[in-house]
Amino acid sequence: MIRPILVANWKMNKTVSESLDFVSRLKQLVIGINDRQVVIAPPFTALYSVGATLKASGIGLAAQNLSENSDGACTGEVSARMLADMGCTYVIVGHSERRSLFGESNAVVCAKISMALQFGMQPIVCIGETLEERETGRTFDVLARQIKEGLHQIESSDIRHLLIAYEPVWAIGTGKTATPEQAGKAHAFIRQLIEKSYGKEPASRLPVIYGGSVRPDNIGKLMAQDDINGALVGGASLDVDTFAKIVAF
Ligand code: PGA
Image (tube, rainbow, N blue to C red; front, side, top):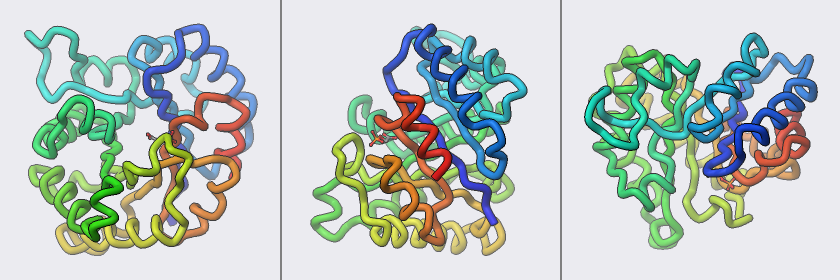
């Protein structure tokens, strides 16, 4: 049984003081909930103070992105070593906004996953099809390619450190959630792909979480699907009471 994991992806939102207000309240709201992992992904600017407030709370800290390069001449970038030093234990890699707005290819995603693993962080690897890809029947081909190319340099022994987030691009920030059945099918397919390449055992332990317009009123049905092990929540993670309801699904 995989412990459910609920990740708040704040994207480019919240100042340091807004972030601290949120996490101080969240800590109170989730007291006693120990059967699931909660993770907060604040913007880079709030990582340090959020990390300090979360210490010993059991709530994990994630970065939203990292550089595929090591420390050095890369103005404006943040390295895996810096993020690990900040206390991040997770990092989101290959979010669809990174892919579409910043041109991140599967090869870049692969390099970022390697960097995260090298510094002991668990990459939350985002994959998902666009509306056009779904409507032209290419969903599974797209997912297979993102997995194959995104993970091609990853050792089998590292698969147990990964999380995959299935985020259909058409469901992100649109209010259109994949039906639990659509999401369930995609998750089962992703697990089969991992099983084919890396074996049954690592595939059965791999958390595959869903993202795309997750809200308190749809999380229960999504989590009832066998292969859905958690959620990556954007818009609905910005309000602490709403996110706490999702955590308590
Ligand atoms: P959303 O975003 O919940 O606002 O759809 C999810 C995500 O982008 O991770």
